[in-house]
Length: 249
Ligand SMILES: [Zn+2]
Image (cartoon, rainbow, N blue to C red; front, side):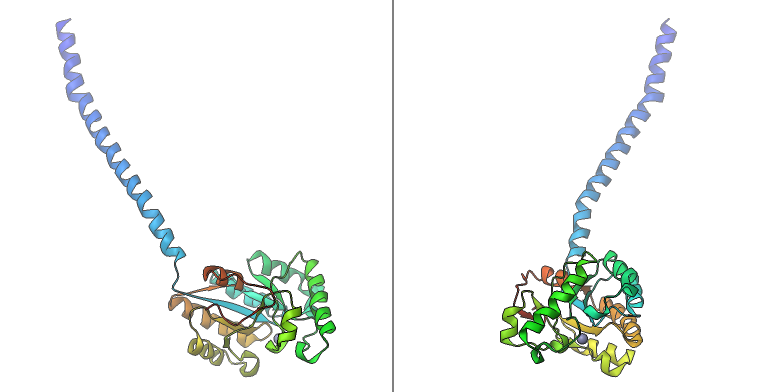
């Protein structure tokens, strides 16, 4: 009996104790790792949310046969943009691409119904240009948030009747004129700064090719590339109807 008790004590000291001791050490080590992780995670999030430089990409005149290609590039770099569409282009041919455009988180604004210059037609016609396009967009369940008048033509009396924020641009790529990817890229890189709105067009292959150069370069330079809503939100600017915005500065 005594021998049995001695053996039990021996077992307790020699065999069990190390397990208790190391078990405790291990669990305290785990506790310290997890508490480090808890402290570290918010720091990463803060860095991810903080951008010194942010710019918006905008595409006018679509949808077109190149919209899908543009979406490929945007998706590849995890970037979204704002598309200012023309009512006459919103036909069933582009139904699938419009759905994809929205599913990827891009947004849509109105660029008129027939691309007529607003300052050269009657005000009642301007309202029609906007209303027709708005109704077409409704069939895609799109509630457009912004207007970009064709050619950027606007005046004070038109501003009063356009009950949307009016979004122009401050970086003009002239992609419609040059149709040359390198030239379009250079126009962006030369003029870009924090808060810029970049004007591109939806129906040129050279614009798709230029985008492949522009996005990685801007990201390399530390720019976050976003759509119009995100740009103004990140800059804490509340967009107002009947007002013109060329950048978020
Ligand atoms: Zn246009």
